[in-house]
Length: 170
Image 1: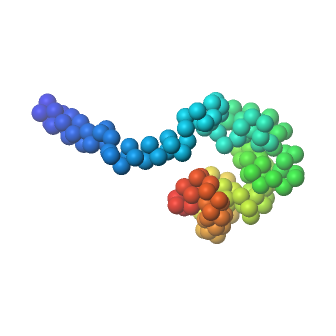
Image 2: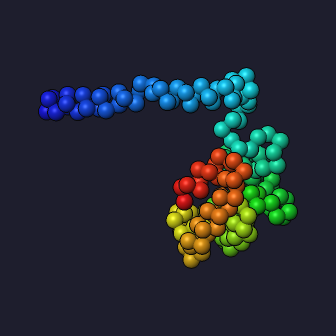
Image 3: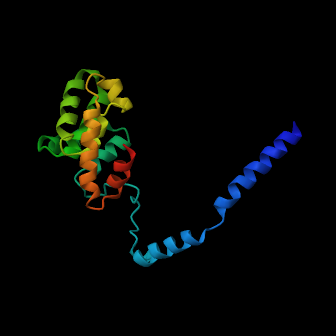
């Protein structure tokens, strides 16, 4: 038993060792990144992990969702959704179908409308989306996956890193 654990430990240690040593190609990529993005130009914002920053129209609504303050999120997102803002419609739909089963149709309508121009809404209606299967099982389809791919491809052409990532994932 002890011998088996020892062998396993040796395998784990030796298996990880090559990943801890910097590779020459990694160093050159990192140096190139630093030359293009000096540390002094990196934003000191505490919200660097978020795509929504204070002052953005969606910031307070999405923050409300993150903090599970759905009443605040709904209050902030509703006026934008009424103006047909696709991202606001997407987030408001998420708030609505999570907060009440009776408003599922309203949430679905918002998602479908947003999905025409917002790839994340289209992806939320794809056949492999778990929440879509849970809330709208008869509406989930590969048609929405194709729409998401199309919209992500358009955004990827502009250099949108998230769009590039998702266009390769779905």
